[in-house]
Image 1 (cartoon, helix red, strand yellow):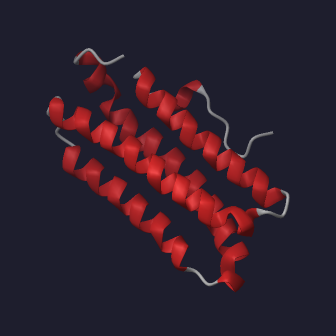
Image 2 (cartoon, rainbow, N blue to C red):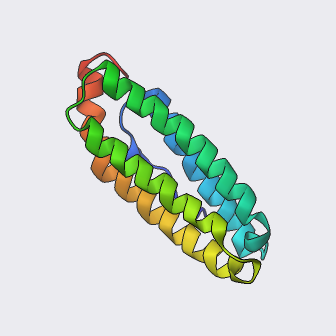
Image 3 (cartoon, rainbow, N blue to C red):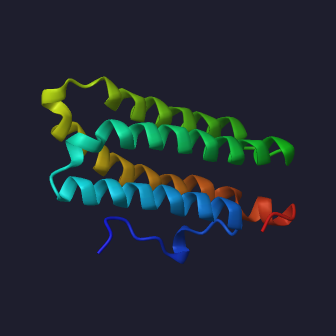
Length: 135
């Protein structure tokens, strides 16, 4: 059973963004599997790099839509994105002896943040984007 399971309740009703969210969920699940098999500390840096790179791509996509279709909550949403990047980056500066502890903390942070962000922030733009023709 996956650590984080995608379901329709996470859909923002914009196919491109839903696919990007699903890819983030897949990455979190791969990290969880590595952690469960004792490889979490080993793959921590690789997962962090992948998450930072893909999150930046995804956030830029959302933010581009928010500026193209003037979205009232753009600045607040952008701040949430930056907080996520900053938090993830903070895990990269841990010493090797703390990697397993950091891997577990990262796993929990990722699930909490992604679920909360999608369900409480991204869902707010769903109807707005749909009204502007994004589906």
